[in-house]
Length: 308
Image (cartoon, rainbow, N blue to C red; front, side, top):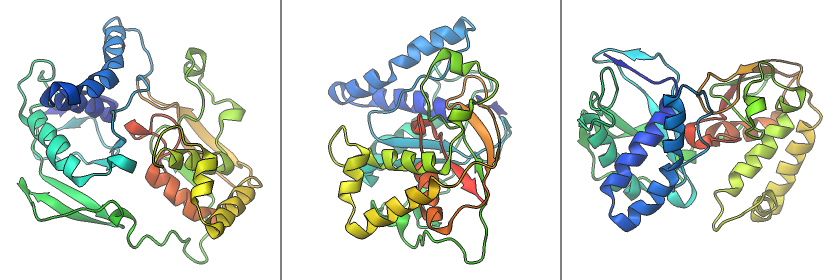
């Protein structure tokens, strides 16, 4: 039996990141160790029983870890489901096979005292299967521990067959955050709030603007902005996006039940929101935002939702 930490995605990031760094040559490991350094300060604060937010860190590659909601205690034979997204220039199937999967295999059987402790996950699991997204389907590349070396994943197959269209005659009026979101700044006072300030309640316009900001990180080069995203679109795409943003600005939040995220977890708020009605042209952009995750700390899976 194993007991999971409350935020398994952060644990995955820290432990797998460290295992990857340990396996890499010194020069290649340097950016990984630099990226992981803030965890040391966080763990010292945790030992001192000072509650502090999970550090806003990420791997030196563009990666997102999303653990599907589940329970905290698992027995033999039970499955834990999680997703890894490699994004932008880091979307490389070879990188997954050569760096990330071997680290997972090592973490599955490790006896390293840094990770292997009573009722801990590390050293106590098997990799039963690995699947790669193709549209709404998942294709296996590992089954019963066997890797299919003939499979060649591409960087665009995740979008194959996704229509990004709202079903006809269906009304969408509510949004449920699956993982905590954070569109604000990280300040200690804000962390102690029990109720979300009105200005921090996300509107549809905020979410679409956050999507554009998110997309800027996938463009080639560094320091891209929302303007660069718009410049990368053709005229029809820019017109469609602008129309969606203008419509979103007209839709108020009808009601919300947003509560603080669990302590010692990334993100800030989680819960539900309702709207008078979500216009059909906005739906495709919301679907894309849910896939890519929006806001801060998306590396830990923050900022995804369902609409209905």
